[in-house]
Length: 313
DNA sequence: CTTATTACCTGGCAGC
DNA sequence: TGCTGCCAGGTAATAA
Image 1 (cartoon, helix red, strand yellow):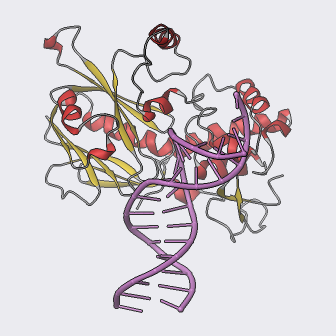
Image 2: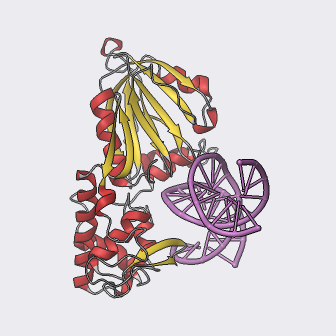
Image 3: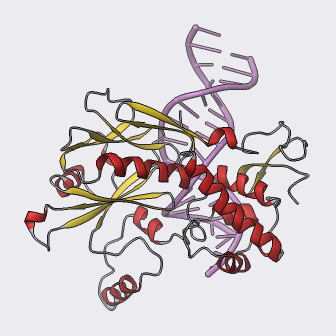
């Protein structure tokens, strides 16, 4: 049982995969269901990764980006590639011994040279994997070299092959909320630009990357802001509170390894412990921890939304 | 350009 | 008990 992976859960998975699998060489790739790999056959996917070494495990918003490189012996120009993964609602990446039973909905298994396996599991079948060339800078916004390259390629010639949607989503991501780029001023300018409910603004990955339904509700509670407020209606003091709440909630959730996500590693399951610290998410009917008023659940911006009608204005 | 709506998919659960 | 039907959730495609 696991909650939907948002930034803190994906960061927790990133740390575990990095600790257990980084530096390991891929000795086999088994694709049980090719639909999870975008725009590439299972055979090509396997061929491009087999024999390469996992050199880096990064996270951007809710995306994981695994960099693979050919062995150093192959020379400095050796091929590199990046595996981009989005776990969506129910995806999991686990590292475990090969003897562990292959559970239902295990879709891709990477055999590693330390005897462990990296497994992609997704019981709701919404997540996807894609490959991206290693030479591309890739994970940032407004990549100047990428834009220039695209511009030249597009001039007068046939349109370049469509990129997997997963990679387009990755490129379109907004600011990383725990980075130095995410300032009060940056948030303020986003809010001035984007119309609509603050809840919808927080969930828009093109503005701030990594916040999903759980943490949107928790952030708005901490900031004392009603989810139906519009972004451009917030006073400067409220924007500052919102900024602080985004960083505090996400950082605290990472410290507790996320919300009820079961990160199965090396024979030991470790449960994220942030679930016990949730203040409003799925607490409707319970007393607000601040004022005692019953927490309300309502639909805001098309999402189930939980808030305190007294504390959040 | 922006913003709203819908499809995708399965397990879990309410209702009968 | 066993069946039906409906819902959550994030993203991209489609609609307006």
